[in-house]
Image 1 (cartoon, rainbow, N blue to C red):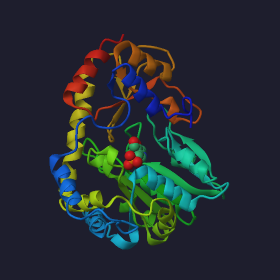
Image 2: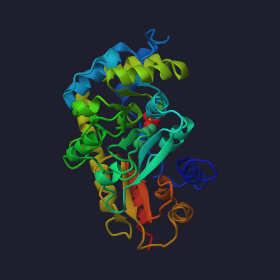
Image 3: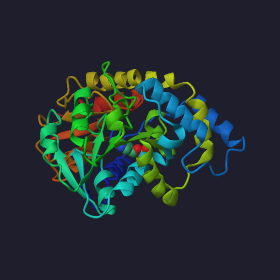
Length: 376
Ligand SMILES: Cc1ncc(COP(=O)(O)O)c(C=O)c1O
């Protein structure tokens, strides 16, 4: 994974954004707060004796609420005790999953542009990331091409659906292709689904949890930070078949043991109404449209975003600078921070594309639009 001075591109752009007092459409977090009802629930929990260790794999009530949610959304019946572990965010779940499966010289296929934690986590486990590249501008997966990367050493394939940074979503046919590739092999699928409830234009989130055969070889990863507008809380969970979650728990117990109890207890109550998540897609779809409409007359050209809270924009009409330099110059010249795409590729491929995060208040988007329209 390419980076700048050994610091992730997200930290680099956020630091620059702060230095220039810029509008930060770079790093993926909302600039609005989580709901008052959620905060009230956490407060209640904090003051009601929920402050000692919770069980290693998580608060039972929370795991039950998650199992209920999975039944509603994905028609899969999972056992809260055998199939779920609560984690300190998705990043820890990804890292622990990789450590629990990957040993020295094992190969892991990752799909680029790829979220930046995958490759370093694989290397820390002693494994070797093998990159499959989705090509600009469609960013589709040719599954036969991907299959040609599978070798005897392949132990894992990591997918991210909906996909950061492209906003692509996988279809049922994609998941069936993946299922075909891994069936009759010992390959585990790590399915990063942190943006599961941010799906636009009436599309369906095709979770690995919906495909029984695939589920049996998968660990699916989720983040409450992303779905509850509380990225700083660092709480998430993973779901998988008993044999994989058992393996996961063996590592989890020695590096985290258990996640903070009062937030788990509060989330268990909050999740008793899973319908709350139904509104998320339209909430973020409206923001995606607002930003894209606002930039309609600008020289930034949007690429389709069907999920996540990101949209890619092609800036080739404005500049031929490389994407990292272009993003830095945007902060300095017009005070808007964005994220370049090349650091998501191991070979730093540069297609003159930037990622904008639209999880922002309307006034923030207005200010950003006004400034980005000045570019010509
Ligand atoms: C694709 C993807 N996976 C995982 C994460 C990390 O989630 P968490 O903050 O819960 O660790 C992010 C955060 O940006 C992400 O975009």
